[in-house]
Length: 271
Length: 92
Image (tube, rainbow over all chains, first blue to last red; front, side):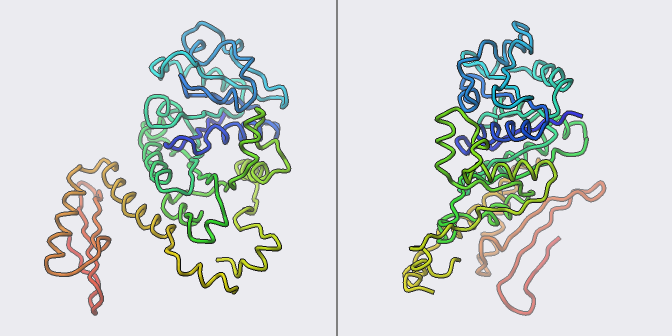
C-alpha cells in the first residue's frame, strides 16, 4: 500500500526541500521504492538539491497536461536504486496544477512506489494545498523561531480540515514534527525556543531534530541529499528521523551542546 | 557553576518571551480558524476589558472555548481570578 507523505511548513526557507530530499534518499536507501515530487511550480528547487538539474527534460505539469508520460518525466537517481524525482515546471505558474491532474499522477505513481513524497511550496496557496490534499502523512518542518512555529500551527489546522482524508471523514493525516536548524548552545543560553517548547505549542509527535549544520549548505552546493553525508551531524540526524519514520525506536541526538575543552572550563553547568 | 554563569543569568531570556507570545497568538488563531465565528477574539477582548474594570487579571486569565454538545453549541468562558480561596470563577 503506497503512502503519500507531504513535507510542509507554511513558512519558506525552513528546510522543506532539504527534508524532502533527505527522506526520499533515506527511504530509498532502506529499500523502499520512493518518488519525490516538487510542487513548487515556477520556482523549482528539488532538482538542484538532488543534483539532477541538468537531466530535467519534462516536468510535473507536462505530465498533468498529457504532454509527456510519467515515465518520460521521472528522473532516476544515479546514486540510489528505487529513487525517482519528478521536477516542477520552472516556466508556468501554480494555476497549471489541477486537483484532478495531481490525483491522476499520484494514482499512477501509487502503482509502482511504496512512498510518494510531496515537497510543498511555502505559503498556503494552491501548490501547498494540493501538495497536502492527498496526503496520508505529514512531516511538518519547523524552525525554533516564532513566525515558523505560528505558520506550522496554521498548516496543522489546514491538514485537519482541507485534506481529502478530512473531507471524506477518514482517519486523519498522521502529523509529525521535524525541528530543523536547531542550535543547542543557543537553547542553553535561553536565546532559542527549545524543542520541548515547540512541541508543547504545536502538540504533535516529534519525528526528529536536525541541528544547525554547515553540512546542509555543503550538501546542497554539491547537489547531494545531506542524509548521504553519513559522517555529518545533520546527515545522522536525518538518518535517525527516517528510521523513526519507519517505526524504529531511536533516541534523539544533537539536543545538547557539544562542548570542547574551552566550553568545559568556562561554560559552567549547561542549562 | 563557573564565574561566567553570573553574567549569563543577568540576560533577559528571549526564548521564554517567544514562547509566551506564541502561546497567546496560536491559541487566538486556533479559535479563529476552528470554524468558529470570527467575533470570538473581539468578544474575548471586550470581556477581558470588562473583567479588568473590576479585577486586575492577566490577559491569559480569560479563556474561551466553543464546544459542541449534542445539538447545542456551548460557549465556555473561564476566568482565573488572582489568588484568594476561590481561584476560578466559571460562567456557563
